[in-house]
Amino acid sequence: MNAYMTPWLAMSLNNAWANATLYSSIQNLSAEAFTAKRPGFFPTLSQTLNHIYEVDLYYLDALESGGKGRTVFDRDEVTIASDLARLQLEADIRLATFCGRLNDNTIAEMRTTERDSGPVEENVAALLLHLVQHQIHHRGQAHVQLSEAGVSPPQLDDFYLTHGRVPSAEAYWS
Image (cartoon, rainbow, N blue to C red; front, side, top):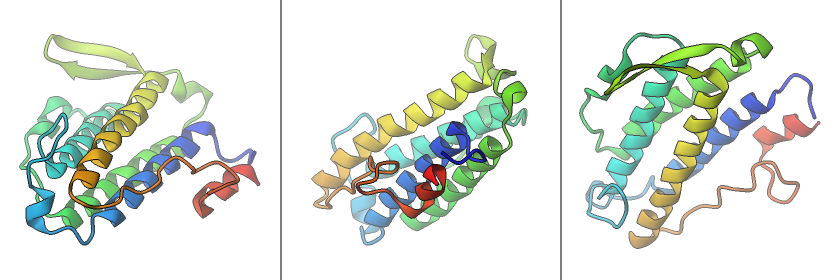
């Protein structure tokens, strides 16, 4: 394992790769198909991917101590897939940059999250683990929605393995 790439950075790069791979599979999907009703927790692929993005904004704001809190949710749904892909990439770069700067001290720090019941102090490591798990959870739902739209969902779980390893993961193991 590369001493310069922490597991946190590797997880954030895996997350960015999975999002980019997912978005590449929908690049030819029509706007109508992107916003059409589909089975899932959120009723459209657009709403599912917007949810991933805005929750990323929420936790990134907390991790970076940005002070925006729940106001990050005060936004219009992005219904053009290529626009949302660009925004998600920007969020993924922010997350990877944050993770690339982590050290033993910052990973143990506390951050404030704004909840309906008031502010809650959370550990940076726990916030990162939750953020990554949240994305995995909803990308799985997007898989079902893609399949229902007639698009073969992409393989998203071979990032680190020798079999199927992607180039951006290779540095982790060299």
